[in-house]
Amino acid sequence: MLFVGEDLDVLMALCDKIMVICHGKLMGVVHAYKATKEQIGLMMTGSLDLTNVDGKIAGIAADTMVQEDKDE
Image 1 (cartoon, rainbow, N blue to C red):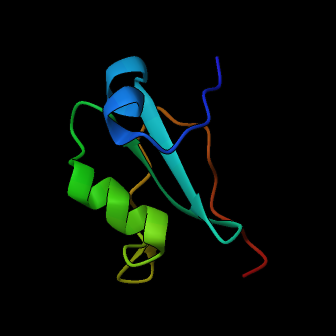
Image 2: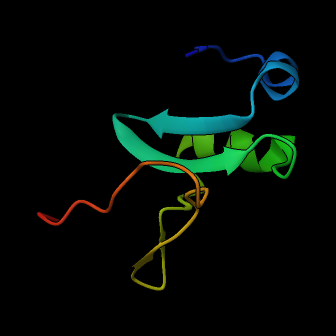
Image 3: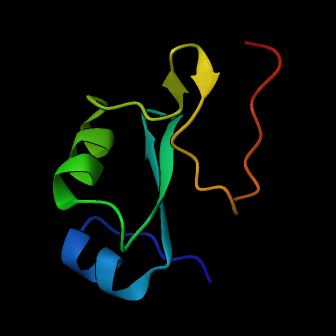
């Protein structure tokens, strides 16, 4: 099931994982029970990009089927 919303309390209560996209860019995929509201909020504003840490793909929950874009 896909749920789209901006209410963090509802998202964290209903979802197993949360994917944040800001301005068309994937900012990260986190487990709802591990992430904080602050982390998710920063990803929502584009201030925190968990997908690129030290030049490596990161911030993507290991059991998520998101792959690194080879063209970038």
